Image (tube, rainbow, N blue to C red; front, side, top):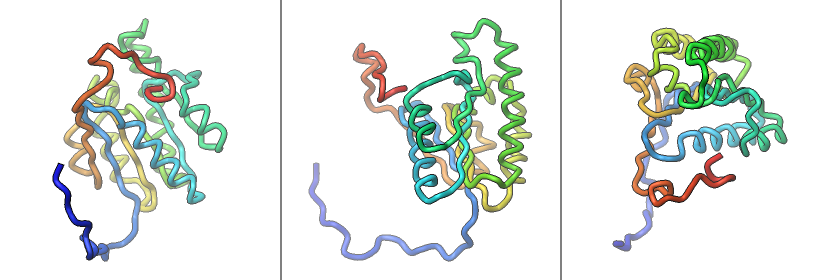
Length: 189
């Protein structure tokens, strides 16, 4: 490691543009996509903003750590899926759940009722062809100007990356799973 001096001057200028809702994407093969989105939801909630979280691959009855915490602070989290595809007994049912769920998400984005709508794991039904990519892109473009949307998942389609304001790619450097350590409750749930 090389030691460096802390900056003595602000390393950037504050942008002069208008404040407006932005589209954020957390993608890539590394860990932290959903975790970052949930941190964003907590930050907005802490400022008194109205937030809704949708999880495209989780079942409606899921009770992971984030569900328990968000329930305590009054942030709605809705599972729209049937679990990950390798657990599904009926992939057409999974596809239909994603399509039905997207209609709810789309209505909430376009309503302007929420400061932030999180679309957790939305890239999976997109890359599986279960959701109409053009409809998602058009919805993001048509949202009210004060609405922020955060999308998560691996292999985010380029069409969404192109219209997003902020895109972060999580890249794995090392993962406990590769060393034979299973997922840990409270860290990966």
